Length: 342
Image (cartoon, rainbow, N blue to C red; front, side):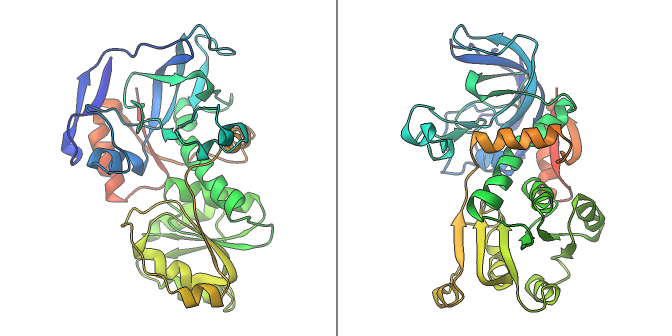
């Protein structure tokens, strides 16, 4: 099969389009012929050599996959050859206490397809059968690949951790990102007032179409000041953040008393300053989030099937142009998801 791999950590130039053997499945696995694979910033971290994701090389990235079932292991039930499927990107044991309690993202062996195992930058991918889910009938392969990781992440942040309620106000940083564009939709669907940020004026109408009530250009406006104006000095109930140090102070200053901040990423670095007096005197809550549960993903897929959520796709690239796709992601001149197609 053809695959995009890297044999050493480094820049996009390390990616190469090569021949690899088709994966051999075990009795509890499924082989999927990849039709689409969406990019995530995780792909960049893995390629660069983030110490949080150790792996043998060469490696195939790609966590968000949709395709057609090619082979089914002897012990894999309820899956048929030729079925259109998308993959749950979180891999867990489904035997431990956390998994059995429905908190599979707390599994001690939890990892992501494309990080702990070869992913979807290839014509075929091997996956445990329990990670295979049917594509809602109304979705294309590209649409089905574009929603899993960002929808489960956004849902877990907004509802399981932040406890967002109908009528509350939420600030979503980076509304043009995958997580941001999905969080805007979910928050609006839940009856919240949604404020989001983007990096250029051309992205403002796109965020409004998704449901944002107010869109701020963080390159030309002081976010916290604008948030205070929009909320009559009160601030927001919830901040959804995945960027890190460059926006951290703005996020904290935008919170109302008793506000909740949930963070799931650190694309601008891993260290921030925190004024503890500000935190306790304003009774703020800060939570870290990593992915979400399969139950949350199944619910998101149901909403996708009902067209109450939509995949936001900026652009597609052929698999062999994965390097150009990652460079497009690094340019930040995109809105929504970037998808590789086979």
